[in-house]
Length: 477
Image 1 (cartoon, one colour):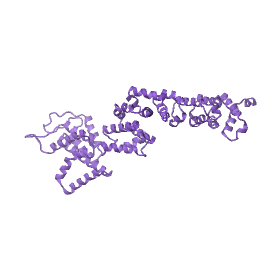
Image 2 (cartoon, helix red, strand yellow):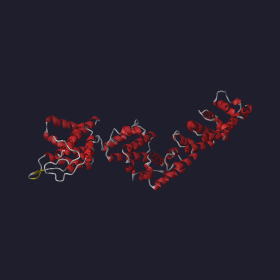
Image 3 (cartoon, rainbow, N blue to C red):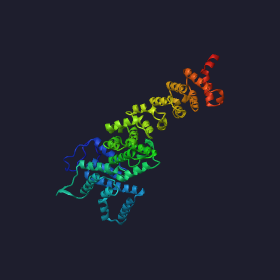
Image 4 (cartoon, helix red, strand yellow):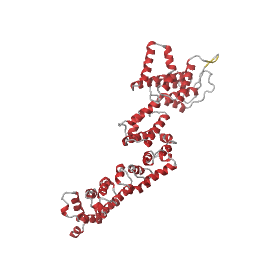
């Protein structure tokens, strides 16, 4: 058998192909790549045969082998669906087994004739448009396999373009896809995301979804999945944990299929935003913070409303909205300006203090400096300052020391002293640079009198450390 030269024209069959075009190495390599996309081993073998026939110029045989690959792929999909508990698939396989055992040729032909309709109508494996293209493959297979004559002395000879077209369609429409597509696949995806065990991080969601219907989906499936998740996140009331799973799935869809979000939400997102009430507009801010593309998709009126919401909104979700706005470039400034004016108890639970910017830390320290009650100063000391101790800079530490001496609501709160002690004891902290501040702290603490301070307490230890910078200690030296 002669070797096929990949860089030359494919051999013609007789003189029946006057329009045979030159094939380059890349186009043939594309066919080989299509063959590797087939999921089923049997279908992959027949498609590989179709590609070999195509390269050899045997275009009728290539089309016949492509149709056989479609049949075996469909049977494989039925087997997978049966394992998943699909009753219709089980019935189809039982019918096929009966045909095989009885050797019923007529029933076998009927099964093959109706195969594409069953794939479209009963299992939603192909769309109506894909059905038409694959139906053409089925019709051309019959023309290639039977002695159909174009004229009295010329058998039917398909063009190389037609053979290539059928090979490509078979893989793109059917052979590369898992057995669940259409509404069934969409429902399966939503059910997976609704599970309490679905990952809440993007990486985990990617690993989960890339093994299912999103592995090689049709564009319509990705679009409907993105739109469905976005609709729920923006317009429906969901528990925090469920929202986390939905956002993880949404970002995973974008990671697996780049630009899926922008293509799917263009024209949809502004309509969703306009249906959201003022009190629920935090959902728009939350969506923008996790889906950066959303800001550009919104129209100017919606972007302005988001800005005004951050500047003036109140309510239970204002803290969450501010925390989200801090990571949105176009809302960051307004959120920073608003932060000192909002109850810190509403904001802090939603902040990742190890990742917030210096501007955010400075705004939170402004709240500490202006604390209006013992409880507020203690809350900020324990929930903001203490977690931030390892990353506070010298200016921020000086502000904390100064707030302790200047604000009676700070140094009068007994619970602040343990936090201040941990700050003073921070490894490698150059206390000598804070001599004047520590002297003032010692003076404030000393006014309470030794009778009020028990040895071994944080307050006692803080007095001992700061005493090194007091006037009495300095004169003793």
